[in-house]
Length: 174
Image (cartoon, rainbow, N blue to C red; front, top):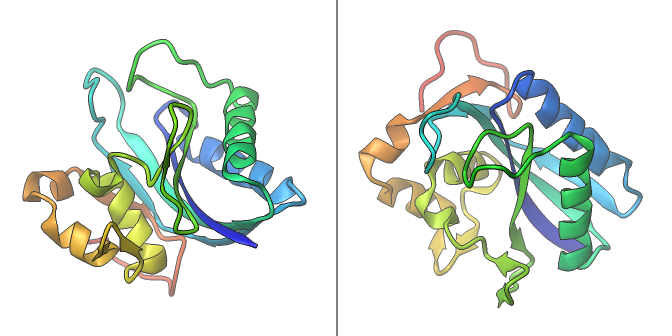
């Protein structure tokens, strides 16, 4: 059995519905088990700034699929949820990125694991830390990577909805 972490993002309404539908599609696949889900965070767009804020989260799955089969299935889900690739880093109904797959390192033009920019992105690392803060990525734990981020990166990420752990009431704080 293989373990993978997948980042999900959406900034076209209904944002939360697209996240939920993507997770449902993953759960429907007989060779994928969704093991855990992070909280949902609202984040500033990266790259192309003239667009709505994103909802982002990370899930942990176990799977019998190869990395390429998992990538293909994630791209199929994006297609089913009407993902359009018109502007690089532009608005999207759903985005699914494989962050990690076991302890594998690969970069062949089709798939790069670990995801090449994950260590720089608060909108990936903070949700990933909800699931497994002690996970090592390139020699550092996710918690250490979050702590090393510039403060301006963290300010653009706000908890939007609690999905993991015990319920909390009151304002969410990172």
